[in-house]
Image 1 (cartoon, one colour):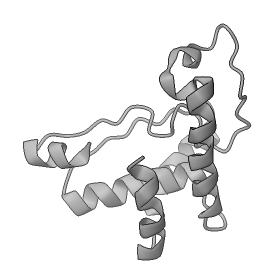
Image 2 (cartoon, rainbow, N blue to C red; image 1 turned 180 degrees about the vertical axis):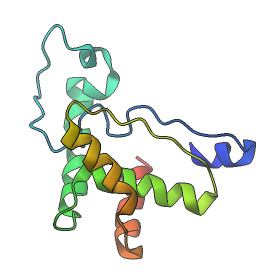
Image 3 (cartoon, rainbow, N blue to C red; image 1 turned 180 degrees about the horizontal axis):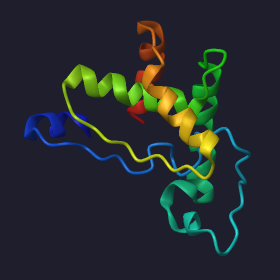
Image 4 (cartoon, helix red, strand yellow; image 1 turned 90 degrees about the vertical axis):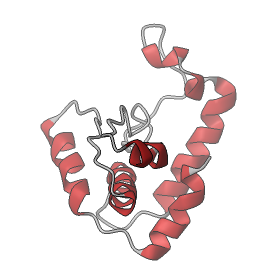
Length: 125
């Protein structure tokens, strides 16, 4: 998404950059209730959910101690934005003040070149 944004010189506003809670580290139910809107999204269908949870597991393996998967995802986004000189305003959800603080702290997470290299194939899936 970011290369076209850079070319057009507009601001990107990524909605749900944490995968509708997949990357929050919260217990994620593999079966959604009838009232959960996510049941209508392709990434949560039975055939896609298993593959997506494997991607989340790979992100969790790469975690730096004290840094959450959500922070890794947001930090990766910030690194890519700076690299392409794109203005972005991601909109991660937050149900608690602690999640808001965690999301804000992602701005100061420094990903090494090795970590960026490990995350690159996951971002292109």
